[in-house]
Length: 288
Picture 1: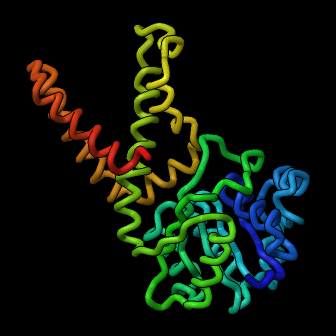
Picture 2 (picture 1 turned 30 degrees about the horizontal axis):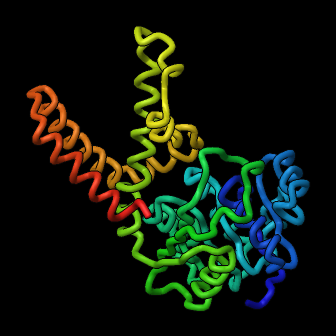
């Protein structure tokens, strides 16, 4: 692909920082500029080779950019879009890394008056339980999916550019509607995170168990690894994709209620059927 002159990354934590670092390592951009509120973090991003330069002035950061990648927590995106709106070149492509696409689109429409033709909503399906610029990894997206949720009015050249950049980082790009995205990831990503947070919090609230975490083994550690994820990010996801998340929390609650009854009744055959069905589904669709 043609080398770009300038890309601006708003939010240089794990997601934005990994995007920037990967493009920098691939030498696909002349200048990658980081923007954020905390100058010490931005200086660290330069020192770690995540970005080439930084600015704490949003107008300066986005000026004449070929592409702006918004990688802030969802709760900050609306204000960022409103603040950058007067300073964006009409040819600048805008994309994001938010986990609730319907909400991001609504925020963009509110900030810009309508969804800009060059706005390509996106969501990289990759991450770590650790966050921040020190976790940035240029190889993070290799063999991971990136979901784009463009609208019918989205500029095809903008979609192509965003697609090419993600593919250059090794990602597999797919498209779907924002509604499809929010349902799927409420069930497969948002729900598991909430369950992990809830399990750890529940045990932490029961002092009668003593030093219970001392006795945790592999299964507990695997299940709850994602409870070490960034609390701000997951607070925002939970509130901004709430309808779909509540739907799947209730479905899971129904499943748990059924299992409680089976355990109380010592119905081993029914429990065996559930466990076998779940094992077969996971072995077929997830374990490679």
